Amino acid sequence: MANSKRDLFLKRRQRVRNSLRKVNLGKARLSVHRSNKNISVQLIDDVQGVTIASASSLEKDLGLVGKNNVEAAAKVGSTIAERAKKAGVEDCYFDRGGFLFHGKVKALADAAREGGLKF
Image (cartoon, rainbow, N blue to C red; front, side, top):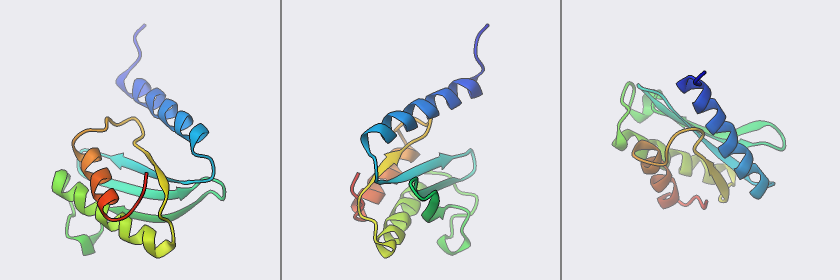
């Protein structure tokens, strides 16, 4: 019996996360979630189990509520870079989850790199 799309997505997300975790012990994780309407990103310290910084297109002060396009993703990426610098994090690893590194996810990553995050 064939797996559902959701099952395949969850399997791919765990595979990506576990392979990254083995290589990047001790670093913060930049985790991306993309839905049909919004995009969000969190900077997570897995050792302590806390979120260091986060940004989302749902935040009213960014002016992106309900927008989920490449420009919105780039704005969220630059915002998370600013917040990470304020929190004292410059080096992290990029966890794309089960999403392809293309389009909105790539735009977010590029904007975060331009903002000063290293991954």
